[in-house]
Image (cartoon, rainbow, N blue to C red; front, side, top):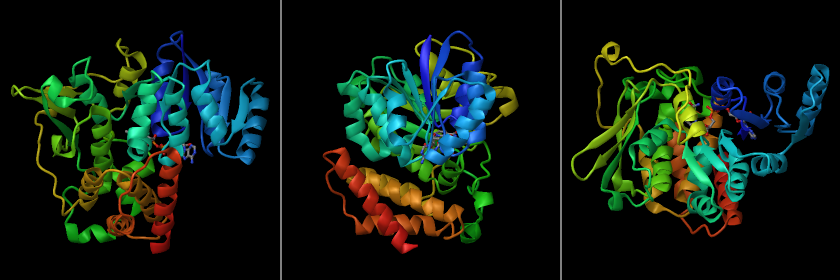
Length: 388
Ligand code: NAD
Ligand code: MG
């Protein structure tokens, strides 16, 4: 039995993970579930999956959760706060951690899992974008295993040789082709993007996801973060990672080899496939997702992204080329901008302008340790807030 901690179990990825686990009774046991504020949903998950520990965001939420669990006669232990998240991510009873908290809030517990040598199933791309080399070192130095959950990176992982060692040319890899759906505004006239509402921005054509990543998909910052994520996971430079728009979201990404071969991974757009892949790796288990019906799909389309329509994608490439603190600053500014957009304090088109201004105000510097990373993150947020 693999003991599993799910960080962010009430979110879109968390719920899909529990769905896959529930299909394989006797193979996985839930050690801990965590949520920020959705206490009722977490209590219902505790009733079904009986974790040893449940962690929430505040003392007040912990009190409410404890009361609900008492009514159920549950013996799940309740805890709260970042230290408890780190504790359940590194506990001896836990073999594998699903890192599915959204944003920088997931960094500390995901890093704790890496330092404890766990199998880390990484959905929380912001944690890797922020910490880059520090995170990859924590994985390598502590004998942890890193498995990508992001559908594109999971696809690339599946298309690379099993002994891949993060040096593309050594394995004959010429390019990584990162596919992107283009989100809900691929065809909308650019001069009308200013008027986009949060409701329109979170309505993704192919995927059902949390609100933050849905806005990131609409600006294509999501793809930008994924370019940086691919750099760290696979050791590819910015020029070795090419974004290809593929509106059907059937091919989840590809690897192009020097001999002209291009390997692709296909599947219906459902996160349970990469989740099941990582849970069972290197075996395969059923995920609840059916096979692609290629005849029904009929046609697959591909084209190049338009940086004028999607300036966030360009900003992310720029951050990767700059290196150092730039990706962390980009990520922090984006988190503040997306939150401000979702709460109707700024317009859609201001998101990229705000990020560009924060990046201009904070030239890239070296990040020798987590302390300096958190300081850059804090400053970028402060500047972003001051510009709203
Ligand atoms: P979501 O908003 O649906 O869920 C987020 C989870 O994190 C919730 O359980 C919430 O309680 C928890 N959380 C939020 N803020 C927190 C905080 N401050 N402290 C502790 N916990 C907190 O998000 P999601 O769509 O499931 O995405 C989760 C992560 O996975 C993101 O990093 C996203 O980019 C990545 N991802 C998601 C998808 C997808 O299809 N949803 C695909 C690829 C990658
Ligand atoms: Mg993705």
